[in-house]
Image (tube, rainbow, N blue to C red; front, side, top):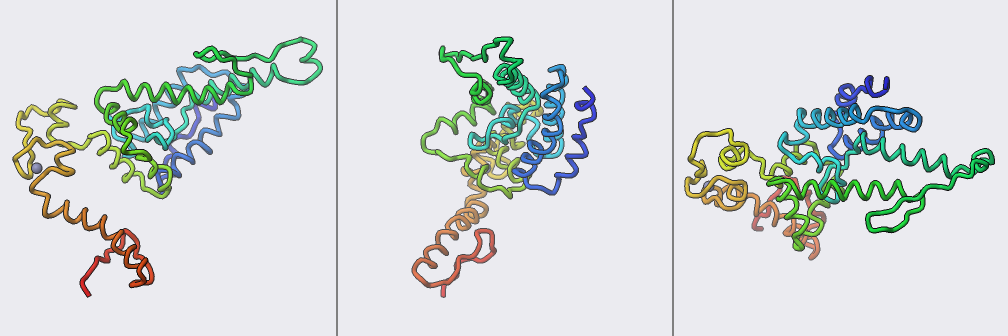
Length: 282
Ligand SMILES: [Zn+2]
């Protein structure tokens, strides 16, 4: 168990600090987990200690602003195209490797092993389909993703908000930015998730979700007209209509505006979406 106990998670955490969110997860999967994966083929480790390691990784993620403390843990392990972070769990990796080790042993073509006349094991899926040994590892990963998805769906409000995004046919590719924007900083990804899961410290959140406030007044602090919820702050507050909403609206349209000017040959290059340049009358 030496490897697990000396696993330098805190040191690795500080080494990967300057990386983007995508690359932090990749570094954790490819380098940190790899330290444990090699001995996994031959060592036997108590599952409880591997689960503890997973819990500690999540704790580091949450303590360093990478994930909201009330965010759904299963989402951390789901792939990015489904709105997860794509982090590999130590426990699942261990179980997967143990199954693969057994199959490799049984499938060994060595004449001595053949003399024992073992038959390469197969597995039956819940649907009754028989899987050959070499496909069992892949199926385990698919099933893990399915069960994590189900866990998210079962979660009361944070999970329900993500479920609504999966099931809304109008928002296909809703999470594609997580896969494609590889340089997104961690605080940006964490911030968008606070919007997705409505975890911003609004009055509604403190009064009904965390129950940390005794104040029965849940009216918006800016306009005082409606309940202060994430949807209200994002698009329903009259106090923000002429300021923040207008700036956001103009910034989004600016990208299309410069693209059109470039298409008709009025400008030679399109400024970056993040540049401060704004459309001006000639
Ligand atoms: Zn308001």
